[in-house]
Structure formats: C-alpha cells, structure tokens
Image (cartoon, rainbow, N blue to C red; front, side, top):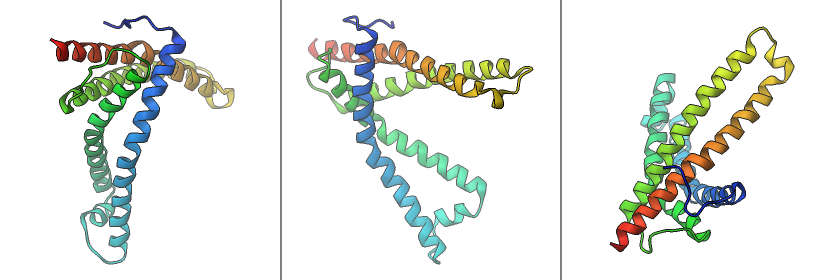
Length: 184
C-alpha cells in the first residue's frame, strides 16, 4: 500500500516531492493571489463607502472568520484538479508511471488523493507534536530552553518523512492505477 514501484531512495523521493511541490505551488499561486486581491479590493471599496458583503463581514470578527473559511474552502476546491495535473507532471518528469492521457476526472482524483493523504499525515504529525510539546513542558521552562525550536524541527522532519513514505506512494499508486485503467 505504501511501497514505490520502482523502489526509490530517500534522495529520489525527496527530488520527486520537490518536483511536484514547486509545480503545484507555482500553478496554484495565481488562484490564491486572485482570491486575496478580490477580497482586498472589496474591503477597500467598502471602506470608501461602497457597501458589499466583504465590508459587512469585516465589521464582525465572526463574519470575517466565516467568510475567510469559506474562501479558503472554495479556493482549495478550485485548486484540486490543478494539484492533480501538476502532480502528474512531476511524476512524468521523473519518468515514473503516468497515464498517457489525463482527464479532468483523473486530475481531480489525484488531487483528492494528494490532499486527503496529506491531511492524514498532518493530523498524525500535529497530534504527535502536541504530545511531545506537552511532555517537554512538564517541569521545564520551554521558551527559555530553546526546546520549542528543536521540537518544531523534529515535527518538520516527521512531516517530511510522512510525506515521502505515505503521500508520495499513494500518489504513485493512483497514477499506476489510472495508467492501467487507461490501457485496459
């Protein structure tokens, strides 16, 4: 379930992850910037007398949290197929198995696979980091000891290992499955 075919070393997995990451980052950045720009323009217009839902929401902290959360969910949903397309391109750049033709549905499924397993890894990492911070804080002044920085680095390393050994193999499985389904 979490094996790579072909087997990849830690260095190759890291290179594959980086290849997918920068492609996804650059492809989704304009979508996020456009969303932020629209909110900023609406908020600015509201401050200058043009009523709109953004300026109305800005009057209430709960409104800002609600609409901000809805915006993050909306933009995230819009970015799911982009994540799928860019992940496929990253795998193709490393000459791993990818479908010859890639439909919108396949891109959405790969994007959902990527984000779903990323959320699972992040939840486990965050639970572990909370437990470590709690254990480290017992009987010690965490802030002055510099222990928090060390714990954050440890959490980052655990998150990277989880990404390389859980998320990337699941992406590879999805792409192999899609390539097999496309052939037969």
